[in-house]
Image: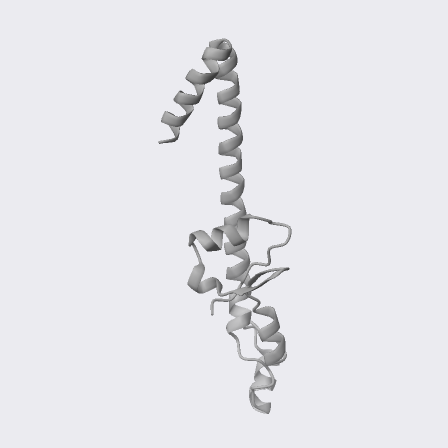
Length: 133
């Protein structure tokens, strides 16, 4: 699919300039495209690693729900410790949101076109959800 578009563009450029020049332009654009794909893949891998690291902490019960005996056991245990209160847990489990729009439910949209637009339109302003709803 992409190769056909590149060949059509190369033919148009060759009509305006030399084949060597057209090839350099197409090769440079293709390199940029693949670098962007690799960078996006690495970014997604990093986000998945962050989710894997934080998800157990969000799944753990908060200390305001535990009994006194459970809290004492938890202090000495080496298991993953959750947030101190349910309020902190809820604050940590933010949804995908933009500065000027309401939060989106990330689990319902994950992988959809709307989710990718929300995440990729302005990476500096995106807040990625780390907890499925």
